[in-house]
Image 1 (tube, rainbow, N blue to C red):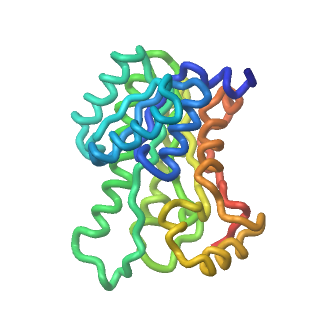
Image 2: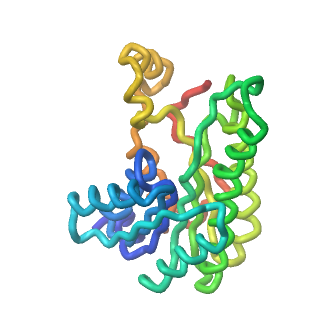
Image 3: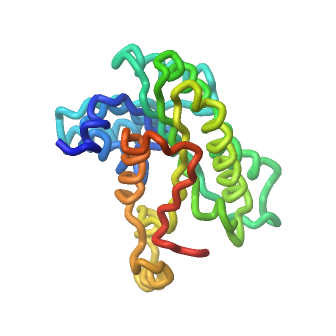
Amino acid sequence: MGILEKSIKNKVVIVTGGTRGIGFSTVKSFLENGAKVALCGSREETVNKALEQLKEINSDFEVLGFSTDLLNIEDIKKMMDEVENKWGKIDVLINNAGISDNVSIYDQDDKHFENVIDINVQAVFNCSKIAAEKMKKNNYGVILNTSSIVSINGQKSGVGYPTSKFAVNGLTKSLARELGTDGIRVNAIAPGIIATDMVAALDQNMIKAMAANVPVGRLGEAEDIANAFLFLASDMASYISGAILSVDGATVI
């Protein structure tokens, strides 16, 4: 057993947005390294589908599933209480749930921007608050957030998404300073262009063109982000807090 697996084994991990893409890959990677994982999704049917897929991979995985409203504090408390009652603690929270945005400011209705900020920022704050309260009791915890490459340079259309990820970066750095004395580390990962289902559905020539603009010569895989989460959650990263780790193949957009 390697150093990474030793420090992940038996950790209790919550992953929001854990039913597909980066989230699902992250759940799978933590389970494969011996963690106990609670995955959260927005809909019961997608949560159940993810649980079925994981059980097909390994029926011995210790995994729970929740369809939790991340904008409802009481719903989050209920979910985290169930996790704590089942496994006795919460070691790691991965705030991965979020929505993208490419709608021009000229075409947005009154609620569009607010909805993006709610899901991508308010939900991160809500989950971090409840998890931190529980982690503080054990003087130990790790909170990891999904940011984005566009949190650095913005994007051409859909102002809500980069705005929300700039906010996630600020939340990450500020919470790292506030919660450090309680034994809680807080970091974020800023993925580049990742070959998710959405990207895979594009024309192959478009995908090749996107990959050609990445200095390492390929698009990122969901597993690349999952591996970064594993590292930051492990004891190997015990002196890393307040960092925004770019996992983007040196891409500049």
